[in-house]
Amino acid sequence: MSKLVVRKMELGPIGTNAYLLWEDGGNQAVLIDAPPDCAAEIEPVLAENGLTLRAIWLTHGHWDHMAGASELAGEGVDVLGHSDDKMLFEQPAVMSAFAMPGMEFSPVGITRWIEEGESLDLWGRKVSIFHCPGHCPGNVVFWIPDEGICFVGDVIFSGSIGRADLPGGDFALLERSIREKVYVLPGATKLLPGHGPDTSVEIERGSNPFVRP
Ligand SMILES: [Zn+2]
Image 1 (cartoon, protein in one colour):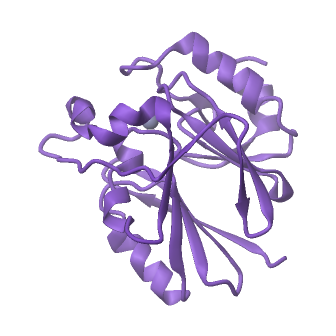
Image 2 (cartoon, helix red, strand yellow):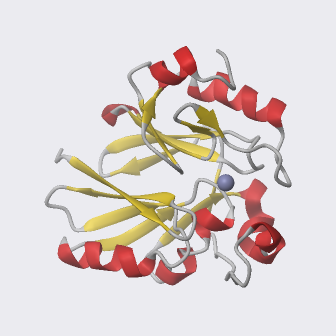
């Protein structure tokens, strides 16, 4: 198995982390989250590395994570999301009150709805999907045990957690998601969040002030 490359790119007007994944020497790529106007940044990286985008995996339906998906979607690109955020993907205008003034969003056409406990294949690696509601109803995290990494979107951040006060948010649910789905992963697992720096399960279990194990 070749080395998995994870290119972290902070994109869009409020600095959302997108992650472009490919295998060293490979010709396919997967994008985790698609901030607004991301195509202009992602396309040159694809071209430089001789990559074709095969899939966009969306951690949740907030505009800053998915409004760029329609720029990159097209034939041969699978777009994955959880059905509990269906309304946000299909009618993104409902969140426009929480976005930047004047921004308009195109609906995102999800081609495959994903569920708790499902597995994906990433060039021979297993990817486990866990449904982690609380920040918004359809949050999912993508855990790649072979690589010791988990893409957590806005569920948990370095020293912080996702907001639970936006429509569809629920702090008790978020707390449960973090305890039961994130804190139970191996301590060395690197957490790659939707905003800010990386962290690990061990660090957050030991010192996250908002959700104690
Ligand atoms: Zn969010």
